[in-house]
Structures are given as structure tokens and as C-alpha cells.
Image (cartoon, helix red, strand yellow):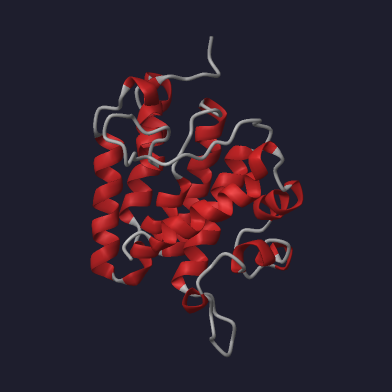
Length: 206
């Protein structure tokens, strides 16, 4: 299944949000723990692993995380950072099965493209993006995306972002050098193209 990781991540995010009654303890742990193997991430494990397919959970004798575990955790952490102190869910799909309706959410890099329209922030944002797109190291890539999430939240906290698709992208990024190149191309296409008015709209600015 091409979008299995995204589907699983969406299910976990919806569980964390809890129909407006978010699991604050788990979200706090996600924000505090950089990686899935951190001691502070232990609160996250029951929620995360209970929703994952058995084949996606590590059986490595040393406990080394699978690509799926690493990708899902990274996306969940970004979601938790963005969701903090925001009442409505900041997650929504960036596509709609009903072709007559526009999707509620946008991809992570389409969201950043909206910030790029601001002349004051474009230069610094472009430099961060160029560094991210040049890297093929997952840890560095995740660190950059996490930093960009904080920038996105600071500028447009209520925009709904498809963090489930971000998990899927990160999973593919890990699988091979060829796939990491393709995913970076995809991210570049989303970031540098002209954003829609929906993405441009900064709801935190008067």
C-alpha cells in the first residue's frame, strides 16, 4: 500500500487530538523528545505502536527503529509542536477524494511556500530550505524540518498541514539514495511554486 505510513500516522494524530480533548501528556512528550529512542519518548510508545502494523515495528535485537517508526515519530513530533496552544486541530489531509471539494489541509512544504511570499522572511527561509534540500542525512533533515515547523507555527499557527503525508515522505526518503533525491525534488517543487491564496493567508496577522 503506497500510503500506508500516511494512513497510520493520520490515525495516530486523530487519536492524539481526541476530538478536541488532546492527550496533553503524550503531546508534551513528543515535543520534549527529539527521537523515538529517547527516554522521554516512552509515553508516546503505547499510543504509537498500538496503531502500527506489526511488520512496521522493529524486531531488531538491538532495538534499532524501523524506517516506519522513525518517519512516523518525526512527523508526530512536528504535529505536536504545531498543535501546542491551538484549539482546533492543525492536521488535515492535503487531498480530497471528492474532486468537487477542496482539501482542508496543505502539504508541509506548500505551507512554507506561503511564508515565502513575505519579503522580510524569504531570504532566511530560502537559506534553511536550500540546506535541507541539499542534505541526504535523515537526522539532519528531520532537525531542519522541526526547526521549520517552529517557524511555520510562529507565522501561521492555525493553518492545517498534512503531517501524515510528511511521515510518508520521510519514510520514502529513508529507503534509498534515489528515493531521497526524488523526495527532495518533490519538496522543492512544492516550496518554490506559486502558493494558493489559502496558503498565503496568515491568520495570526491583522
